Length: 318
Image (cartoon, rainbow, N blue to C red; front, side):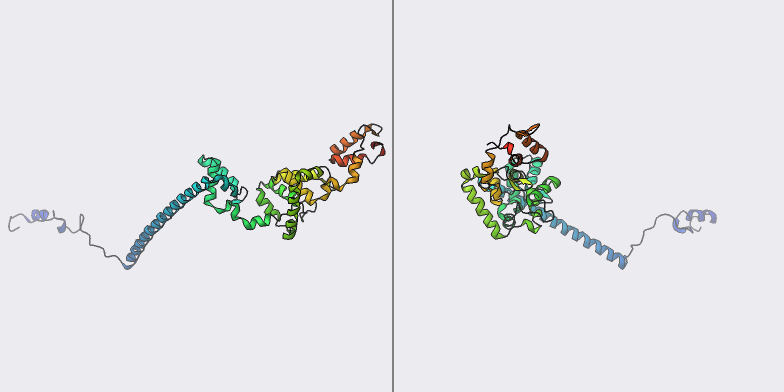
């Protein structure tokens, strides 16, 4: 008012152009720095600790990955050593041992072949270098137990079933592999021989195998090992379910069942030489036809069918 000699109204309006001169604050003002509370400081500290722990975990992960990498390289080098003497080392591979996760070693080999497109020998060597579960040499305790498995003993829960039949049933029904099926059947004590009996049986089998050319002639395929099962059926079970060579399977049955030896039935052997197939068994049936009927309808062995037909004197040549 005094310097510019403005009227009071105009001077007032000019002065109100400055926001500080208005009754209400306008515009942005510089905010005061907020002092964090103790709870906020605590939260920030926790965040910093979590970040440090995260960094530590990352370092641990990195260390774990490095250890895995080293282990893989060691496995690969182990594979190379195995393949260098493969013809000898592959004998130690246990096909039906349990690799893990419900898989047998053989199933694991198929998985490796399919996923990595490698040869079978490479897959086997890689698995053998990764785990001892697939090495026969590392399964001594289990192998000793399996060597005492009694193939032809009765499986106690069902007297009409042999232990070998129980194993065959487990394989066919549940698709489990042979070794696991044997161990499962051996949970029943009746399928486990004593060490003394197992040793005695092994000696009998070895004696028969050492003289096989002579002993094979004494094997009676269609003799009955018991009233319900001929000897050849028992041999078939061992070769199919257990993949045992036929000659050894026959030797095992001969050692277990003396009735599977021709020499155990001298009178029957002599009687069978007199069987007359063309003779009349009845008004409309020859003795040969009667034998065929018994084999087809009642699943008799050929030997037992002949002996049954020869109960009528007319089927015996004079």
